[in-house]
Amino acid sequence: MNWISTEEEKCGYPIDAFDGGCDDNPKEAAAWKTELKKQGRHTGHPWLGQHSAVKIDAERDIISDKGAEIWNVLHARGINDVLLAGVHANMCVCGRPFGLMQLAKNGKNVVLLRDLTDTMYNSAMRPQVGHTAGTELIVSHIERFIAPTVLSTEVFGGETPLFTHERRRHLAIMIGEDEYRTEETLAAFMDSMVKDFRVTYILPTKEKPADFFNMTALATADLLLVSVRHRLLPRAQLAALRKFAERGGANAGIRTASHAFAHRDGQQIPPGAGVWIEWDETILGGNYQNHLGNALKTFARTSVGVSHPILAGVPGAEWLTGGLLYRNTPLRGGTVLLTGRAEGAAQEEPVA
Image (tube, rainbow, N blue to C red; front, side, top):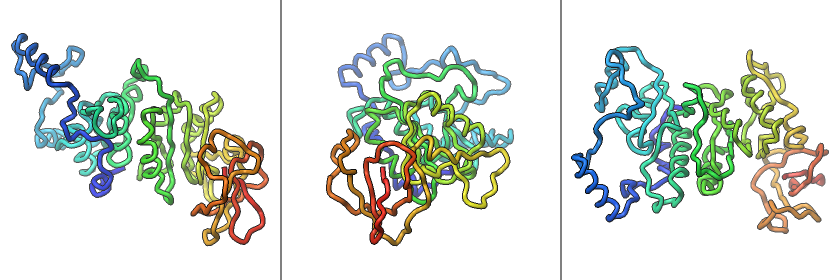
């Protein structure tokens, strides 16, 4: 997913760090400066060295904060694959000459180690969420506009880290379609909900639209929200989806999710890939049989006599949906919450 400056600039960062990101008050800041002076440290640059756990190999390692030097080393050593970590993701990690933006823009295969980064963010600023949620918003921005991310444990092994105070449910959102721009609309919707959910995006790269990264999120996700259309995943990724469903993970699908992992008529299945045609019936309870056409207006309403918490705030009267109607009759099971009809058609179809 190569960085395109106009896309990223149009979107803008999802958190406001215009104040520099510091959230300490003047009294706390003064007390910290006093403590630094007692220790004989510079109050503006108090660092004395790297963490004791970081070992430096004098024969192999390069230490520099100059972009030209870093690029020269990458070129001299023929390095094209780069893992990036550090603080702060919304500042140096993205913006330095050797940061994510420039590495992606100039053709390096760059990946962010998302659990080894942080943000500079004051929680009193927009969107007024906790620091952890603010970091998640920046990570999702990076994944959508700049570069893929992975957990350090996926590279080096070990246990996936999680903040001890984390109490939010984990929502994984899998997006892979080229028609409805749900990578923008769903993200904009979920950005307002990070106070309630820990959100992880499962996305493909533009180079490999059927190969998704962040699939490890399924190991801890409570809910998987799917907006995918005709993507034939590698068999290992399909196996991860099946395992998620088998352990009781909740699934929600929108629009083309009914044929998310099904091949088109006559399409050859690539080597190493698989299909899950039964996903629609066994997981979503649907029975997708194409649609009634783009030209017909579609109307929807709540099902007669059905009461459900998810319908709170949904009007009882029929409304124009702005979309087309899928054929799903007869359903394999489940409760129909919304029904729809196409203009001029007698048959109603389940919508939700």
